[in-house]
Length: 316
Image 1 (cartoon, rainbow, N blue to C red):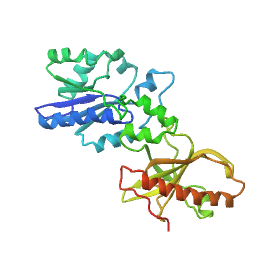
Image 2: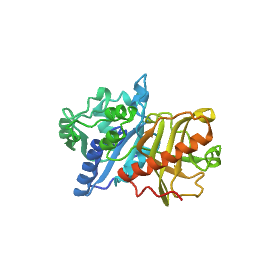
Image 3: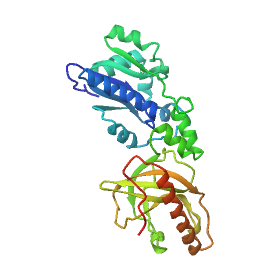
Image 4: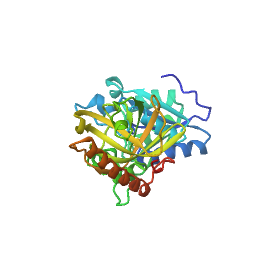
């Protein structure tokens, strides 16, 4: 990593894995941006890839924002600079003082550090709200501590809680804690064309990152957004038992859209769960159920706000 090229006033930096970019993370990033603007400094997020758990744990953590998704959300926040460090055993072994001196101060020209009250970094997570202020006094940078962000019940928000709620299919709680519906970004790939053969053409998403956390398999109301377009949809996540296909798929029937999105990048938001994946005795039975699913999806999309301009467009 080379020097960041910050202006003479330096930068305001925050550090973390930021998986999910939930409301607590966003409060830390927002404080970093605000303090940088007030001081005419660069706002900088320093983060890691792969997720530290993938290196340090025998059981890697499923990612709420896998691949480019975390970078996508960070970019939306209005940040000046994003620094992604490769996380490996050597970086994990650095004590927090060396990490601050070599990475944050020397390379990022840090003049102020912003961290969450429960965050720690460096070997053993020893760089935290108790140790960093004293280090800042010695090295000449300020330290701002951002308190935890509670939910409506007064509980602190965490990525661990969000993963648990997602695994249970509690999309409402996930959206509350994230501050947006849960989503995945991927490329549209050709499918087998079975949906089109029964009058319900679908958009097929490339297999998601294997580290990506997903809600339980099922049929969902969803929103789909791409460059220049957006639509409500009903989404099937999981196998296709009626046609004997056991592979995981994410496919969506878009309401009011008849174009071709092959090869395009799209963002899909889960809005509401409609039912479990089931095997039907015939394609006619499946088609009848999909008509009911469409009605349920349109109703759910009307009742559930999204983060984009996506809305439930009536099917032609």
